[in-house]
Amino acid sequence: MIFLTVFSLLTVCVTAGDEESGSILRLENVPAAEAFIDSVEVAVIGFFETEAAHGYKEFLAAAKQMETLPVALCSEKEVWAKYGIASDTISIFRKADLHQEHLKLSEAKKIDADRLARFMTINNIHYVTEYNQVTAVGLFQSVVKTHLLLMADRGHTHSELLQQRFRDLAPKYAGKMLFVLVNGQEKSNARVLEYFGLKSGDLPRIGLYDGDLDKKWLLAAGEITTERVQDFCDSFLDGELQKQKEEETPEDKTEL
Image (cartoon, rainbow, N blue to C red; front, side):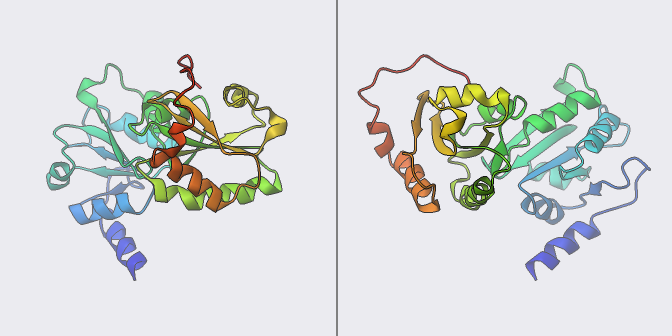
């Protein structure tokens, strides 16, 4: 019943537009916007007053590049007021860190489809985000500075099971920790493994990084179960894990 309600809200809010924007959802009221944002982990809304607005065409072109990212348009001022929008803006709503990222187009130095697509990619932070050079920017810019990393080789049988456990646990820590998947087979990720004192042969392992303290911890080697990972996370949130390193010399500031 809940699914049908959400689906109906999203369906009725689509209106006819030009050929380019005809396939993009148009949000006509606050319930439709709330349903859209609530239905996905990451939602992008282009708040444009008219189709002639600065950046509108570029936004549509960027949306085409981001085929898997849910995108909608909205020109209704009651929705703008709900989310504190005062001028043409591209907004990204994320559940993982309970964050809203707003790009005010009037303040953007230069607007083109590629730049907008990069803005969307950088801020495409999910409950579980795969680490790479682009997503790293969004991860470190997030207000949530604690990252829980699953470092594993993609494609291995055990890796698929671990990833599923990781994904099932992530929503419990929304707004507290960002869950990050690091593919140990990617050469570009070697620095992450080195930072935790690991080699590819040591995987899979779970690590935790706190950006405010610039400290790291490793879950002790052994079977990676949901219970062990949850206890590891909770021990950090309770302050117990930090006590293990209170007497150690702080490390030099390192960017993964």
